[in-house]
Image (cartoon, rainbow, N blue to C red; front, side):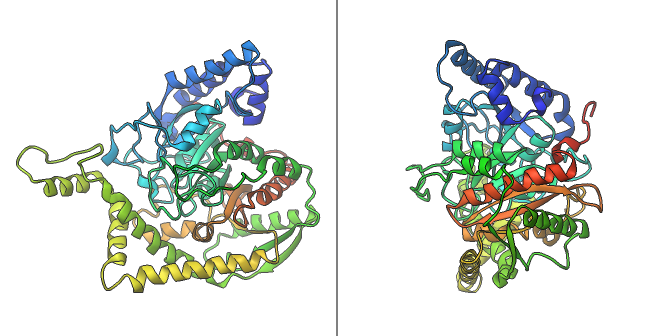
Length: 503
């Protein structure tokens, strides 16, 4: 198997065993990026020099017989451009930050460097993580490697597309309303939103502070678990960080690979089906549930009635927090500055800069959020949305009192065509219908590929949700399902991605 098609676990074993050098692995992925990324646009910045230097350090450790820094030392990774990294630009997919370099590393970036993970560069995203298609980037849309005319999901479309295009075996995403899981679903890759607060948000440019969560993206469940353990853990630099041990997700993934789910109770969320769901998506989901049952799991129906109100609650809470968080981009401290020619006052420069620097979707959400927080409307909109959030959390609590995990389709449809929903924000927002409840409640969730839709031959994702700080439960179920799915479908789904040479 070529280096670019190997899993992260396979690459790590080869590097640490001296079978191949980390520099060779990094160069193979850099060559792949140079070959195909002009047609994918997954990367906003490629750090060739930094990646090769990090890889050489791992090779030096191996050659000297020193212990490697982590089980993923020497493995390449793509970093979503919402996480700051010293020595690399950070744009968040926005013109307003063009040319800005962070003077420090985010905690996630620091942990990756300390683990010897080789950071290839920064990936494309919807501007400030606002979107479900990666069409809202100021640097052009990212294309889905399964069909270049279609979206790769959002906001982390760049990270997931890099995996599906074999430009990187690992990636980091962030998930505010589904921005890891939804791209994972439509690109046939694995995406994990860990429990809120279990991965540090320090150095993650905030969109919605009570919802944002960084997490691992990979092509297999085990690879995601290995990366999860590298980036998770308490961080005193983040006031929302939880000071508890990292769940044993790698051990759970290895246990699940045995294919036995005896004693596991799986709840099927009844609210995630029916009108608006693509028939091929529902068929793939039903087949996945049947496979879980064949693996020994007890499957029951679970009703979570408040989930019907998750989408409107999210689109009041998230824009409200965004309108506050994005106030810092005022032309005085970061990146772009427009109108600073001596003829305009400071407030005029701020207004001109924000008008020129922010895209349409960001402006829309700032307006919604400002309105929802305004005097006289706060209780009616933002306050009511927070009450709905509490009801959703209670639905999860009631469900997890009777089952170990919940499952649903990750998205109602497969990847839609670029531009198809550009003028219909509500249709775009519905792409995150199934993923948003977990963000509002703060629990753990992931998407694992379940097959190709019979409607259009595009990837479909199975969402697995677990209680807060019980992330290992979903890894066990996902790993067992992954083995059964591969056996039933003749191999990993990712092996069916079209060849991309010559694009």
